[in-house]
Amino acid sequence: MSSVVETVTEVVLPILEEKQFELVEVEFVKEGKSWFLRIFIDKEGGIDIEECAYVSEQVSEKLDAMDPDPIPQAYFLEISSPGAERPLKKEKDFEKAVGSFIHISLYQAIDGQKQYEGILNEVTEEHLTLTYRVKTREKTVVFDRKNIAKARLAIQF
Image 1 (tube, one colour):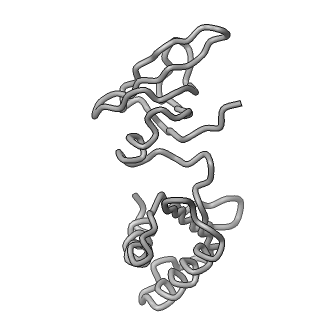
Image 2 (cartoon, one colour; image 1 turned 135 degrees about the vertical axis):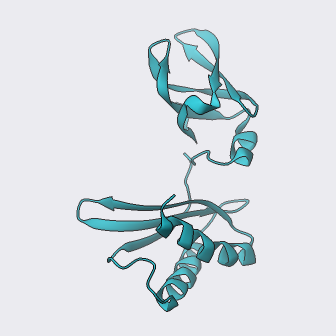
């Protein structure tokens, strides 16, 4: 984890805890010539634009007051909801997603596939079990947690 992400996480957590918001993810990335500091937040029932604006103001004030500046380069601050396709990062994210339709990307292919979408059936410390469709048939696959590059909720069409 980068020092910027660690520092911002330390700054944002007390602000979110005060409002009973959840920190979903902090990322600091360069896209083209610009740097972006993205903070994804959520709460039961979802986050609205006023709540994002409040967190943005609070985080900006705290970061601007820090000396030395933890982010010396120019950047854009974005505070938002993780959206309908929320990433699954923490253990509780996976546990809450049991029974939901999810997307999984793997480091190493299983049966020639590195991406799967289906219903998350079971979560253990070492494995995830997913039921997915191949044409008209349902199949179940068990993933080793170490092989999962990314996981997120998905919209089923």
